[in-house]
Length: 311
Length: 292
Image (cartoon, rainbow over all chains, first blue to last red; front, side, top):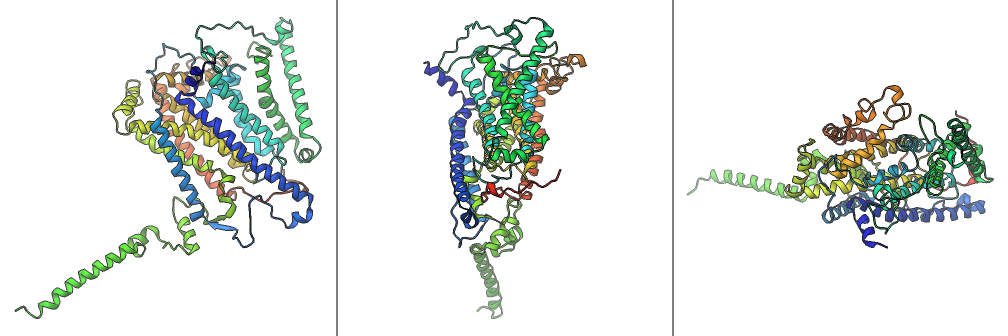
């Protein structure tokens, strides 16, 4: 284990935010889910006892009848806002005094940095370039992610779970979004801590060897199956993608129509909403990890090869 | 012997001065009664009177996005996480430090890198301003993601807030682009190669890039495709630096400000913060309204 190597990567000034994410995201995940679990317990209690549901207090927050329902914004909200501003300023001040922003040599087009990495928030995209060609990883997939985020509220027909933390009432959106969010963070972690010179896979603590040569054969799916004819290979690729879409779609459909709340919500969903969700779920949430596994585990490069583009 | 008629005259002057001084003293003790105070703040602030507290918020241009009163649970930090507000505050910090940096920075190949050195070594607090700008930018992305995360966990993106969620997604994209365009400005190896890697992807844009699917068939070359439009050239050079500067300092901040205005306005118009609201039970689901 080369601890110096790990420290060299972690202590890069521009990588400090990633350490911050590694602390803040788990903390706030716990912070939110803890309230979700408490709310779920309350929901169970109210559902088991209709009489209590009529009269009981429906929040996990304490309430006494003599308390006023509303408070003046000044000072009860503004003091929190001003305090937050002061704390953030303080953190920024300390951070800025103790750690200098990076500045390297003047730009030199004749001297390529190796590895040359995007800023950390785009390293996830750069890591996707391993699994897809640039037209897909760099342009189409980010656009799909942005559009997918925007259609999110329009395909979610659930009337429950608005304005409180809950797990059991919102399993599907929480899992879909959480999966995407943590996949995105995973890609950033891989791109930052694992990828070394030549964008090769170096386990954390493995010294970055600039002369390393990896002998690995990445083969295309038709070649794996021994088909070298372009037409047959193309048909096979389309078939493979079709099978993947059908299989993943079937699995997601089973999940969406699981008896219980999922089924109730499924019946409220229009065909257009259902199809939109399926498209984004299969293409982005299932497609990306599927291609990652194909590439990292099975060393498959392209699934579909055409004269114009490859997937 | 002094003249008798002189005496009252001089005392009047003294008394007037004394009176004025007395008045000034009282004004200093209680500035809220002065004309200057009233002209600025309009409302007298009374600690015990909730009405003047509300008016103090509503009559203030910087605070007027807030309602006068708010649900007692809506101020709880464990529900809100305060990440949206912190993101906006960081945007203000970035605007402030960014303007400071702009006083010393020329977006030209000859001077850009030297200006950074000048900022780091000679300008009073220049290094602090640059560091704060950098770290606030990184922090803003993190708080923005956490803000989105909270909105998803509480289901707050749903009706009636769908549109505001979309505005927020656009703000996310703009924030990332702001950060990315700023990366090139020091004109060092780090920024140069990061932007080179980033914009090289634009080459592969379907239809619009010279290496993208169907791009060459539509007549795309390195000298007329979408990457050329981004960089103002076929390589990352002086034009790219100027473009990054204009996008970073003017175009995207203006765009982001417009979307932020809409975002905050809609928070109020969509009924304020989404919760914490009372839980709804599965048995209480009503059949969907047939509005298509």
